[in-house]
Image (cartoon, rainbow, N blue to C red; front, top):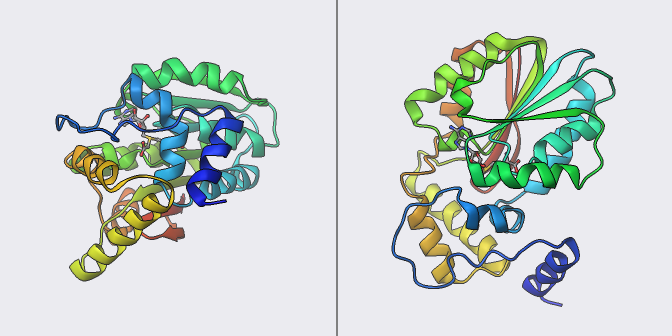
Length: 255
Ligand code: GEK
């Protein structure tokens, strides 16, 4: 069976709605996390982001290692709560609260039923707000799984600083991001490989190019070096990239 056919079968089994939002000609509106996106989000992110499932599995492993009793965990830009559920699965202690934050009405409306549909051990508190307004306290783990990229670049360092201040010693921050590369030849090559990945997952050339245009000025990638510099600047002691596939990375930073 071909990969797109397998994916389709998987979606039917998992009851995920298929993402065909960009399959017909669009008017050129910028991408937003609206109702239509929330409806197809699990399918969209799995078929667009290489390594998404692998990153979630490792969020579980990291939460089992880092989360301490009587502390808070944060899932900033939680969408439908996948990273909160992944953290909850790994947490070994009582009295841990996971605070899941998103500023999209449509995402949060779907997040609660989505979370309730899965078994989870921890208290998951949902907050509808801009992650820049959240006060981080007593945190042993913070996750920014593909969210920082949607913040204006000038606001990113101060958010990382706030997170650092609100974290306990030895706490972990996990940041996953789409990145760009200084070297333009590498940048173009890796973008091509990512588009091939999307095409292998059943997206047409029209879907790929319309989505790319819609994300322009909405998702602003930075280089891996810039992210590491920002984390050092915020005060983190131990920083490295533990996952990369094409232009998608995941970084851990320990206080
Ligand atoms: C996952 N982490 O499945 N404040 C609050 N939420 C925001 C902000 C902001 N300033 N900016 C963007 N968001 C998830 C996937 S998706 C990634 C995260 C993607 C929210 C936005 O509404 C969306 O739900 C999420 O961040 C980004 O592990 O679609 O590429």
